[in-house]
Length: 386
Image (cartoon, rainbow, N blue to C red; front, side, top):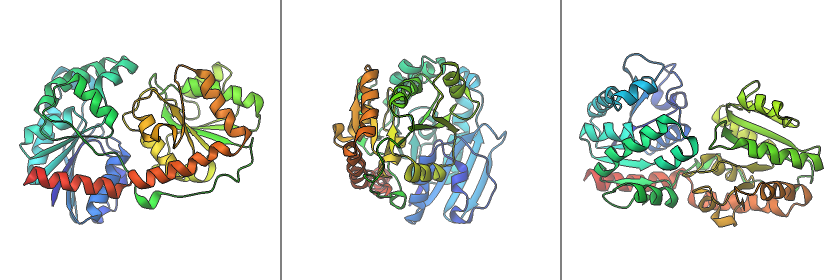
């Protein structure tokens, strides 16, 4: 089948696929997109990747065996707002048409979905966030623009999927949808799952970690404050922070140092994807996620797939669904810093809570593998293109 993928994607993760050896730029980074495209390619399909990148000033085309990549320029945020993505939409739609795909799979409900509509190719669009929820937590003008722009796009979309029941419900409440979204969660390559017995870890000598970013919605200061209390009882505990703004010398470290919350904290910043999974698998005992709203959360899934027990918020969108309402992880209220601190301390006192790592692994292996995701999408593609 000839499938066009239209959306953000980590281009460097496609290097070697279908013989591609081009030294590509990072692209509009989205690791899951690259993993998904690789999985489709491994199934024997012809994949046309259509994306955009601020690092290029002209369209770039790359060809491999059963894989083609078209990268068009992506302008500044201000320019995109002023003409409602007009330049990007025209370039993306043209590249989709040139792919001669049987179906185009657009990611998010903004410029990529609009470009897919403009191309005239049969379309599937995946809802990957709740526009108004994102704006509510960030209060950023660009997020307001996107929430409003979605009113222009979503009612025109015939086939919608959503990465969780939570995000499907949120979008249906705010926007007029032609038909209910089909729930197709994100997934992880089965080869990246690693079961591990963590009960043998020595109580007190624990490494906590998160994969996040420094912004209001990600809420990392709450984790830093709780960890400081944990460390006052267990001085040997450490916290590893991974993600944008969380590197050595970056804004997260400067804030933590200024507030006396940097002791025992390692600021790793952005990491290559496979290095991140290796860190989770070999060095992390407990994954703590303090983001206030999630449509799915790949970071939690990646921890579950390495048998790492997870602590998350019970009112953070899709997080309780992902953690099976607390049966596959620890859930605490975002409004209660004390609950978060006590949950983290519970891992220092005994090995009982660590058994949640095995339950999380079993749930992830059963429901959230890339094989399951690809199988569901291929069925949807066939029904849309026929």
